[in-house]
Length: 258
Image 1 (cartoon, rainbow, N blue to C red):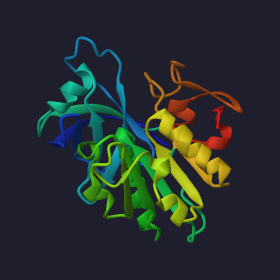
Image 2: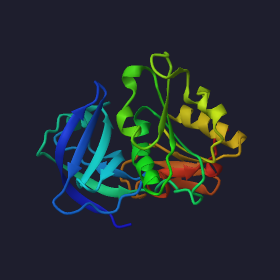
Image 3: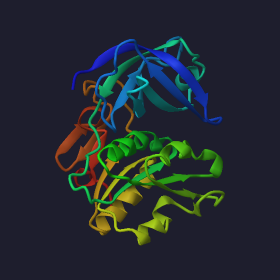
């Protein structure tokens, strides 16, 4: 796919809680085709400690409003500066980068989308794209506590939402792999993004039960185009650059202890 370097204009910055912001961007011309699971590389201006672009998953694309959404975890100076953007500011982005989640070929497949933390971000757009072709997925979203759950009202537009929290303040207590929906529904396909321990557990569940499964890796990235080799992941097919051959990879290609 063609890549673009654009100064996108900030429409709004919504502070979801003290850790996350939702940044909505637009441009004068129509946005290009963007696939679920792809990401952008954001240039952070004015930060003395942020020399490289920051990879941010595409949270959603609203083509009617011509908006690209980025769900950003505020963890350092670069993302803190992004959280302070205001409507009318510009954000220089390289996009769309990476590959995408696989759309199921069988209209009767039961699809489960599992996310934890900011890893829920790319699943919203994927859920919307699944709905566009007549499939309503099940979202299984995990967090430490109720206050850490993100954008549940948006996810509910596109499928059934199941929740786990480690402290039991919302949904079922425990981790995503403990949720009762896994014993209630036979899923044909799982896509997941979040902390690696969570993805390893989901991948193990999928493998044991013979379920097709893809994970969206969050290796540290710099260039976003496979040139710097800092995001290399070992696979059954050799080393691959997650930013180029990923971030979405089938678990059968991963050398994980699952």
